[in-house]
Length: 193
Image (tube, rainbow, N blue to C red; front, side, top):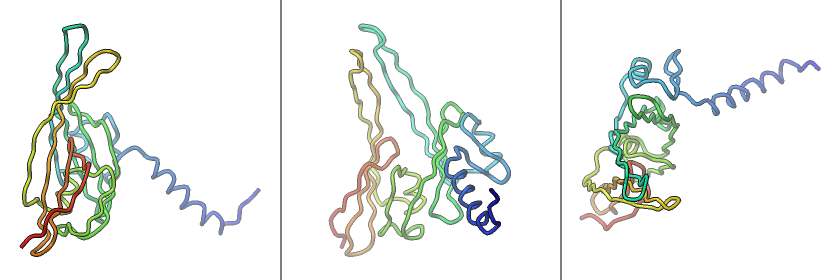
């Protein structure tokens, strides 16, 4: 059956929206960057990121009674802020190769105005810093977490951070809690003078 041209005009945009929503890559100009590509290829295609986070991840696993393996790797998260400011792309690199690409959305005030920001999961430290600037206070520490999986102990080091933003004289403080670079909670602190 032939579909009149006016219906195609309505259907084609929907087709393209569906394809772009399910795409698992990052388009930079005419290049498509995908998982498995190198950080060098990413930077050549997309340029320098707007923000880079580097974190070390240490984990230990018991492989036999009394024997365990400890591993450490540096994980990089590169953030590219979209031209519109509401969408950001997070590219995670492990061992020099892209291990994941996510589209992140942040709605709210323009950069530097953190008072009315609404963060959607998963929000990273890089997104917050790009939108809100440096926090007034930043605390960081590491915790060792151990769980038993199939009778074997598995431990890993978790990086925790607390960021405090002063939103202006006489206003409430905004306290953000992060774990491994991802936002896990927000609180309102006392009023500033």
